[in-house]
Amino acid sequence: MKYIGSMILCLSMCVLFSAGSIHADEESDARMALYKKTSAVTDIPWEYLAAIDQYERQVHDDPKEGRVTAIEVDPMFWAGSEGKMPSTFFPEGWGSDGNGDQKVQLDNDEDVLYSIGTFMKSYGTTSDDIKIALWNYYKRDLTVQTIMNTARVFQKFQTVNLTNRDFPLPLQANYSYRSTWGDARGFGGRRIHEGTDIFANYGVPVKSTTYGVVEMKGWNKFGGWRIGIRDIYNIYHYYAHLHSFSEDIKVGDIVQPGDVIGAVGASGYGPPGTSGKFPPHLHYGMYQDNGKNEWSFDPYPFLRKWERMTKN
Image (cartoon, rainbow, N blue to C red; front, side):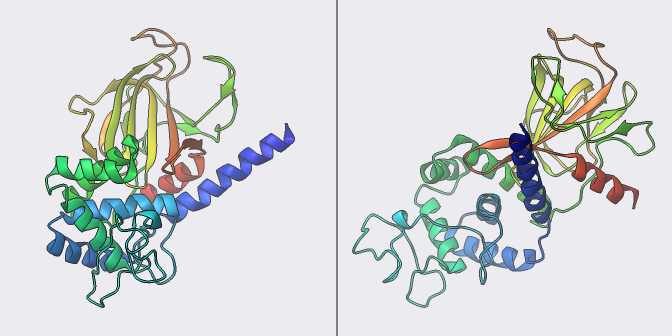
């Protein structure tokens, strides 16, 4: 059991450090310049190119040294320069010279982004066309959905440098919380607690902590009235046991830090409308997706950080 506990702790710490580092975006100006240059020559809106890069940053971590983007093309689908999967070996591959040096290189940002842009354009330039192109490349529905939604966020705010955050409850509210991720649960069977409980009074407003898109809204037997928001870092934010939703919030909406999405309650553990089996509180969970799997990690350190940011 000690070994299992140590593994869980190590995993949560690894996720903490990796997730904590992804919010820094010092090279956003260089990225935007490259996205817009590629968009101009491929007719693919820059926000889709940016969203692909943003997704791959979470799958492959930070860009490699000397790179601006984090996109890593599968060599089996690349027809490039000699020594980089030449087209004579893989005639069905794809790859284009994006910077005019007569080479097609896997580690050149302009070549990679231009190649992806031309690949997508081969399907068309509408939103539906791009969605089909993304599926044919990634072959994973959640990946396609994430990239499409991230593109919508970038398009709305016209930047990739979206680093603001907010605490999920108003700081003037009477609330309390501690680290409860990984604790044993009694309700709903034996399992670990995949989040942090923030206790507050009924009806206290619940806010989005991040930029993202509402992916889920409704009733769950255990979570009660709950909302799920996926942010631009491919992290799913889960708000549960709500008393009510904001009237105008719906699946597909783009939100930003501070947007009110509901109110604190005590719903759950029964049919729709069941409430009051425990004190009112917000269950806040965070889940990371790496392109293959999704797992829970401890939101407590982030909540503490966002609380300090909001106070300042």
